[in-house]
Length: 530
Image 1 (spheres, rainbow, N blue to C red):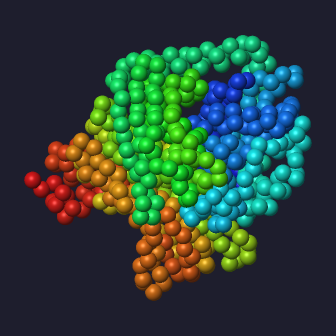
Image 2 (image 1 turned 45 degrees about the vertical axis):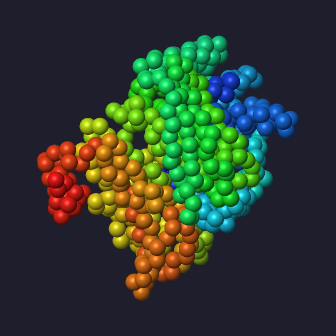
Image 3 (image 1 turned 180 degrees about the vertical axis):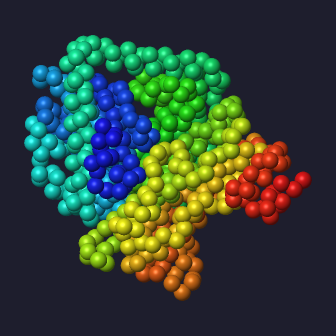
């Protein structure tokens, strides 16, 4: 399903960056399996389907063979408006056997800014078109009224339609594969196999918990909003039956898009705990049922409608992972890394193309440094935690958009020092050939990624514009501006924190860092002087 969706999508955001996810759910709406896609998507599928089915039941909407549901309402589907979810109920001989579902980030869903992620949004309606659960296909017939309503509310209707059709095709492929299996082994055997798979996964998870330290620990970290720091506070309890995470004490929801709906918070905690489990543990409901969240309503991690939520999916999710790690770092020092760059470093832009005269919009996330770990340095220039996308190649961006790239390289010296140093961030810069409205939405510009065990923090993120006259204009980590032809946007993403005392780093590793261009000789002499 994932390969089919990516290969047939129109937008670079899906075709190049693979910003989409696919899953198969059983008759009871439980996640049975998923592709190796986006953690923030994967952890929200089951909750999104549950909310969708409950909504349709309240609306007295019957699901029939040949139907396909579309929804992007974050308070139902579980992420943010750009993530459009399609759900295909799978029937065999008029009897429901399961669901094929996918979620894809559409580059634009309307709203006040190109790419629809507005750092200044005060409520959900300012972020784009809101689609409650509704039939996109009815008895295998495409509802053109729904398609037209959605696509005409975006800046790139043709791209929207192309990506939507790719999503439909992926679900239909999933349906065919499920029916092939169910036809071969029978419905009852299929359902029994699903139950067995989930029970086995749960037992594997319980076996892992039995080997972990038991107790209760607290963690606290912050999301940056202008001059304010928004607190995320967790109490994490590990016991023989699983993990309980309580967000009591977390900041109240805000009139800014940093609120994370419950699906996002669930996905972030699930991801953090999964990384501490055996690699062979599948991601399905058998694992999910061992994790329990308490997230007070009206807070940053479980907001009430109509709070805006676009960046909660992107940035607050990252900080939830960091907070969970921090809570457990004292008792699992061999398994918890120093902080990674901790942001998706979102770049949104758009305008009118000077050659075609057509509106365009673009979205991407930019990597940074992974934190140092016991026995290993951090990794350079990677996506971390709740994102798992690829980059958009420079050649693609320059081909489709009025841009000329100046720099795309490792950000020298950005990783935190330590016995095991943090990974380096990225420097990415381009000059615009036309007027371009740009939005940056990142984090870790005021509080750098922390080190661990004596390791030093990584360098914070930085965003600025170099005007045609050479003037440098600094941007906040959540900001928007208009670039004029000849202006250059420069993005420096954060490096990962270091792990362990820097003075314990071996001379050979320091020399290797210099040879590979991660630090200069001058930086090394200052950093590692006794």
